[in-house]
Length: 87
Image (cartoon, rainbow, N blue to C red; front, side, top):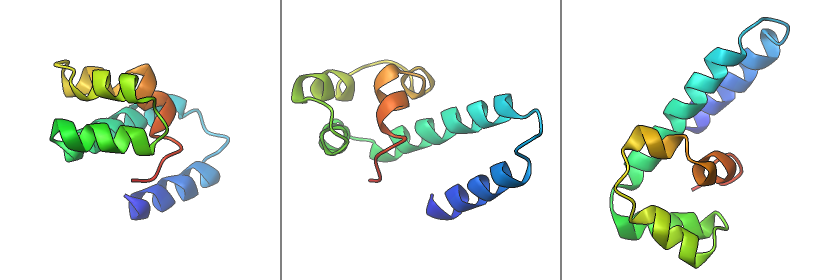
């Protein structure tokens, strides 16, 4: 993840003036979905969401959701929190 992140930041800096925001939005969604899939179990999701600063109630609610991975990747909680957290 860190290696890919460095690459994307460099790419963004190089092509900063280009018209590519939609590409970065799609990549961002894919990275969130991959991170959510990596966590697999409810217990792991719950612990990682708490580490990211989500309240226990909301973390439990989102960790137990039955929504598809892609739907969760675009959720407000992951959209807001996975940006800043490093787990």
